[in-house]
Image (cartoon, rainbow over all chains, first blue to last red; front, side, top):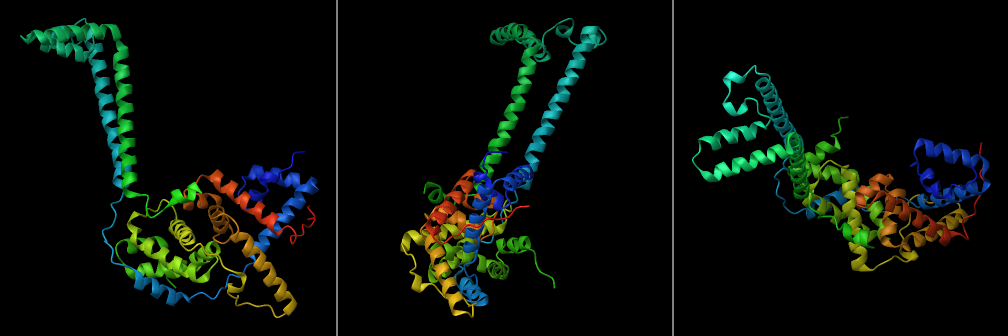
Length: 211
Length: 187
């Protein structure tokens, strides 16, 4: 390897490189005196920085602790609500709802198969027999058929036309939209919950970032 | 001897147990003062800032969640308090005000060289911009990993690396006349 690894030496010195990168740097150091000198300079600097005295004459531990405790104001002691219920409960609940709806959808598919194959034709209302329309449209057709309301009749006809046009894609798209909607609802609720339990204070990190 | 875990202490303190919080102060005060002192450069300001950091930690304890170690959360508060203090006081310490270390070397010549080196390093560190200095101090004196520093300062990992690199580069430039690079034999 001919390229110098100067840019990686800080992370190498701090032990922050991944094993493969570390091996790469070590391999380079064996053959590059320039990078070895760079590393040596960094090590000398690090020794100087860490060589500053640590045992400074600060207030002894017990006295410091007592001073802090004297300054502590009263605080509301209500324990924070654990986020575990929301963290696990909500997605699990949504998953359960999705599973139930999927099962219902499967049941409807088998029902339609039974109707179309003639096995269940006698036990079901007339609109199901021999039709290719979706079950929900068929149900609305039944309701529209017995309803005297012309508005509902019109709506039913419109739905039948729409259903024919979309065919099976409508159901598929509806399911994808539902799953996506459930996911985003959960994500929004989780984000809102995180914002509520992690207010920005006491950190004035914006000041740190901006400088 | 049985020692209570830090998580347990934090949990108890969150429920208002002041003795548990006192134990947390005992465990962490030296590190917090050390970091704040390296940021402020003044031992008196550092002690005041460290006390203020613990008071803020107490007041905001209910907002802490164990998604990060409590120490890092505390460092985050301490660094912010130190930066607030620096902005308020606009104060840096002259070399003759630096407190003496307790472990002196018996050899007067070695002691003199040691003091001169400490003076140079302190000056170089205090000459860094506060935000860059915070990253260096948390790494060198707080012993935090890059990821922990990113958490503590709420900055991206790449920013930690670039600030650390900048800090060391400036220190090298500042101390260049005294840093003698040596050829390191490598196996």
